[in-house]
Image 1 (cartoon, one colour):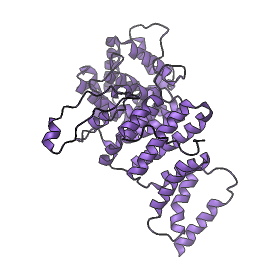
Image 2: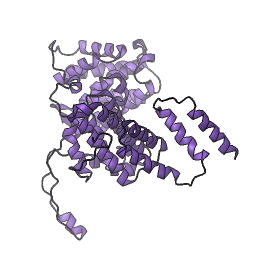
Image 3: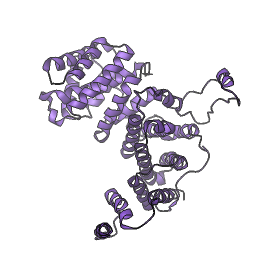
Image 4: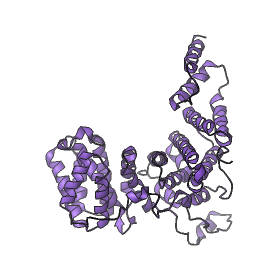
Length: 425
C-alpha cells in the first residue's frame, strides 16, 4: 500500500503543470516506469502496452500521437515479436522512401523515420547476439538510411548500424559477417534465383544455385557512407566506432580503386594521434586515450589480415599494447602513418584527409595538415567525394533505391503500402 501511494504521488507530480506542450521522451519514460507500480494490473501489462503502442504508432492519424507511441515503445524495453518487428521495418522503409518522393510530406516522413529507426535500435539492444542475426535486414535498412541528406535521419541510422554490429559480435565464430553480406539488398526489380524443393539434405547439397544479381549496396560501399558521418560533429564519434568495428573485417573490399581498410585507417589515425598527444589539446579530443588504443588495435588487426603496410600495422599494435603514454611509441606511430600517406599515391586518400580537416575540431585538423604537408602535392581544387554525399545536388543513390531490396530480403511484400496512417492521406 505504501508503494502504491508513493507511485500515485509521483504520478500526480508528473501531470502537474503539463500545459499543452508535447511530452518529452524523458517524461514518457518516467510514466512508463511509474504507472505499472501505481495501478494493480496483471503481469502482462508490459506486453499488452507494447502491442497498443505499436498499433497507435502505425495506425494513428496524428503524427504527434505516432511519435509519442514510438517513445512509449522505446521506454517499455519490451522485446518485439517477429510480426511486430517486420511491421516496423516495413513502415521504416516506406517512410524513408516517402521522405524523398513527396515534398509536401518530407518533414513529417523524416520525423517518423527517425522515430521508427530509434524503436528498431532499442529493440535490437534488448536481443542477444544470435537473435540479432535473424534481423539482419534491420542493419541494411540502417545502411540505406545512411544515404539520407537530413542529419537527424543519418544520426538515427548510424546508431542502428552501431548497435547491430556491436550486438552480433563480428569477431566471434558465428559467421556473422557472411550472414550480413548475404542479406545485402538487391536493386529494384531483381529477384533471388529460384531453388527447387528438396526432401533430403543430400539433395540440398547437390543444388547449384543460379548467379545472384549484383547488390544495390555492397559491403565495401558501407564504409564511405559511414565516413560521411565523420564530416558532421554530431555523428562523428558514432561513425568512428562503427569504422573501428568494421576495420578487421574488410579484407579484399575495394572502393574507387582503393582498399577500404586504407580509407578506414587514414580516417581514424588522425583522431587516435590527437587523443593522446598532449600538445594537441587532448582534453578536447574527440575520443579518450583508452578508446584510442582499442581502436588502434582494431586498425592493426585490419592491416595485418589484409597484409598491408607492415610497418604501420606493427606501430599500431605496439601503441595499442602500451599501457602508459610514451613519446617514443607515439612518435613511431606518427612517423609510420606519415610515411604510409607519402607512399600511397592515392588521390582519394588525400581528398579524404583534406575534406576531414575542413570539418573536424581544431586539434585533429592541425594533425591532418601536418601529415598532408609531407604528402605528395595535390591540386588545389578537388572534387569533394565525401562531402558530396551530404549534397542533395549530387548524383549519389538515394534511400529509395535500396529499400526495395531490404523488403525483398526480409521476405516482406514489396508492393504493399506500409506507410503509417498519419502519413497516408
